[in-house]
Length: 279
Image 1: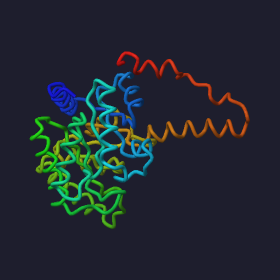
Image 2: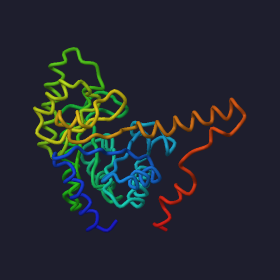
Image 3: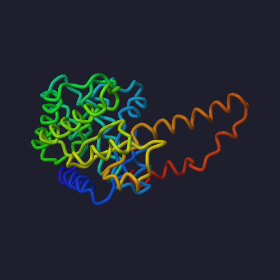
Image 4: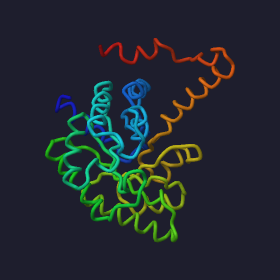
């Protein structure tokens, strides 16, 4: 990607987090889904590590070899003209130095934002706070060296694990969020936090854009905005919705022996139209 264009997209993506309006961010799993979301008018697109992994033939949890991730990201950033943020899981590196190298590579693939989680791959235990912060600092240094002001969304994974003491759980999550911001993160993503009172307390204590995951049962956008949420992403849910729709259709074909289940209001011409002007 042209360097000046990438910088402009990074700056535009950062402006979308100014907290004057909530940012709804769809998570794509391939170039086709990204192009569809761009066609629908979303101002930016994220990727889903799970959906991308499944589309490439791997399980989620940093199971995809990094070169395949980078190639998929490059296809997505080529297919759309809006900022793309990459769910980069734990940073694809065994230490901070390796994370920095991986972040330089994903920036070279066209990314202008990344998610970095503080849990071990596959929703494993959380890394020590200093170790997680060092990985964020390495990502920020890599972005600075590349000259692309990427938006680093630091994931705080406390709510993926049971809490013996919810108050202590929240206090540690807040402390981690502040440490990650000091290390160079721009936003915080407390994945799995859906309780309204706890979410409101977290947002009050963390002076940064806070991201929540959309899904059935999650409060609507207006209510989330009132709580102070800055960004809502769809995580794996659009990818699983697509797979679920196909699964439903093929089960009907197998069960009924007919093909009425293959009728759709999105047809070949619609899919072709996502890319025709880019050839």
